[in-house]
Image (cartoon, rainbow, N blue to C red; front, side, top):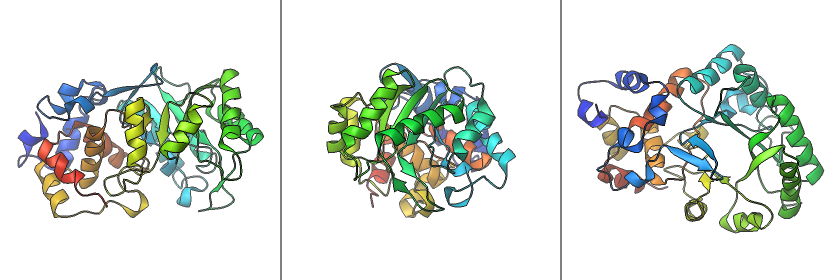
Length: 324
């Protein structure tokens, strides 16, 4: 039964339970099963995206940054819970987990390996390198080739992998030519230690430059209902069929600003505004790969349940008009 048919008869918690009842099938069902065929945006709703044309992932992934301690620093206060969240994500059908060596630092990668290794078939772990952490709340770029090669080697060891499916340059270091940083990743790719390479926090112009050095399969930029400064990068990714992984997809630490329009649509679907934000992203583009993160199982389940929401064209346009 569609959420629109259930309005007025179930509450948000019941909707989540019903949506999750099918387990992994929630994320792997076809677009018609998830969102219906009547929407003019249904072409965006294929539930599978192939990174690099050969690495299939379910379009709703999981971001593992928030599994660490406060300020993305150190171990989480409840390590057992963090492991449970990761395992539950996989149980729900998530097969794209995004992390970085800077999360913790190192903690997020170590937790992933502890929770999930040996990894189930088809699980794609995407990590990043190129940002250092001098202290809590501090992030400093380091794009030196030798440093990046060392980052790849250390991530392989922490994640207990022989090859990383998707390795992303976390940011472009203004002190190092981009071509040199990417040249190091190209060498690691040639050595069989990286399958695909992605970028993070880049403009379309930098994507073009990067693709002159080596193939790029994805871009990870900040993007959500209220922050669309990376709209041009998303449009470029659509044109070139590159995966676009929006970080802070539901607003990040500042949260998502609610309002009468969002609240009304959420009430119609017995959902939260955060679930609407995820549903809107999935319908925004066929290359969109949201990676909402959380340290709570209940929020994880709500996020995954958002893949079940079907926004009407009118609802989608209303939300689309709320750009900050």
